Length: 113
Image 1 (cartoon, helix red, strand yellow):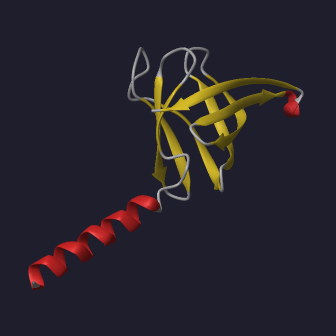
Image 2: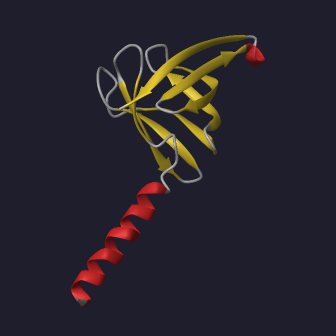
């Protein structure tokens, strides 16, 4: 009986921690097919490329909550960093990188994996 109660309590605690994960955390697939993982790194979320030519490299950081994030994004191929923002709606993230104070932006739809 005690063992059963202990296992139930442990399961509920693990479920609570899992449900507290932020919406941006996890693997996201870009339209290019590359997978990018967002993971907690200090007060922000680091974007780490998981597949392809730049696997293992950091491609930016985002901070925010409630599905709205701001930070920086790095185009690893061109070696340029841009201001970025992301908005999550269910399993889709609208990711934008901007230059010239936000005058020119490129937006991609990323899908949660």
